[in-house]
Amino acid sequence: MRSIKTRLAVNFIFIIIITVILLETLIINVVKQSYYKNLENNLYNQIKTSADLYYRYFSDATLYDNVLNNVDTFWKQVPAQVEILDTNGEVLMDSIGVIPENASKMPDVKAALEGNTGKWVGKVDYDDNLVMAVSYPLKSREGTVGVLRFITSLREVNNDIKRIFLIFMWIGIIAVFVSGIISMVMSNTIISPLKEIISAAKKMASGNFTTRPVKRYDDEIGKLADTLNYMADEIVKRDQLKNDFISSVSHELRTPLTSIKGWAVTLREGSMGDVELLSDGLEIIEKESDRLTVMVEELLDFSKFVSGKITMIKEQVDVEELVKQLKMQLSPRAERENINFEVIIEGEIPPLITDENRLKQVFINILDNSFKFTPAGGKVLFNVMCKENSLVFRIKDTGCGISPDELPHVKEKFFKGKNSNSSNGIGLSICDEIIKLMGGTFEIASVLGKGTEATVTLPLNNGGEV
Image (tube, rainbow, N blue to C red; front, side, top):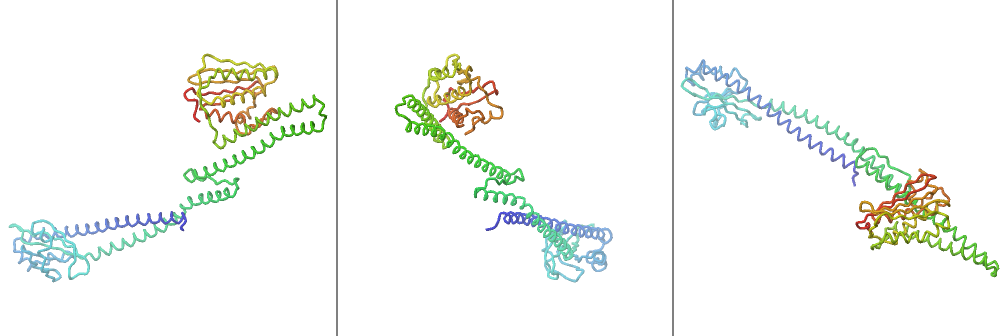
């Protein structure tokens, strides 16, 4: 199997050879026509001069008398073979002593007998090379009396053309040779980056994602290198995501499991008559079990989103009623933690076609974060309004806020801030995925030390796509 480099070089050379052959064929034909035309012009000028000389000085005598007495005047002046024919096409004189039998049938002679200049190129019996013949009418005061014909061999002209052809042939060979070398060099500019990409791809296939092909040119091969690098980056990110997932799950599950096991051991080894100890232990085990349940549900949701298996059950949702339920559900917590929880519904809120449980999950998750990071005496505001065919939900708190370096990453999977209250890092990422499926947007703004504002915008038209 030939390599791409060889195929490119062969194709380049083939194109160059075809181009050189076509150009040289054209040039040689032009040179040949030019040489033949120059020879024809020379013969025409010479024969016209001789015919004019005959008309001026010899036309008083008959053509036969001039052939007998003044023939040298016509053929001594030119190196060509000279023939004189009468008006019947019969050859009266030939400078080399050849009397052709069919001279009157020659096209150049016919043209001259009709009063025009004639030309003919062809083969004759007495010369191995092509000859060119030019005929011109001989005239006297009474009219055309005969034909003057000059014949010359094309040997020298063809030899000159052959020499030029050889020169051009060698130039073409050199051009093809040089072009072949250049083609090999040019093909290397294509093949070398491809080899680097192939080598990098093999290393990536073996599991080494630290290698990166270098982008040399901003062309298709450069784009291929960019694509391969992007793919490697995505694989590394997904691998890191997997590791973070395992690490986060292991860490988050360990704490409640340790607590449950510890209290189980304590209750087993303690006195069963200690009602207070038993009550405290069972309460902690219940809370930790609920915590485990929430974490498992979040992990299951995360797994569904990652695998693309999440489903949305669309129905008409009374948004005002949903918000009121959230207020009732979270108000006791706000009282326990001494947080002012306020819900404001601005204007008339139309129903929304979406998944009510998923929407409730989003708000509970965001509000949970607001309560978690807002100290006692702080405030959490949940504001709902209709604006430009969309429902806008704003959840604003007066908590600790998010640092500028952490803010761009809070919606990323498994991102956990420096705050000790940070959970497993998948809650906001799940919220972001749900909101996207609903066709909405999720934005978070925060000032460190002053608070955070989360804005959810959902369209009223169809509630997003599943």
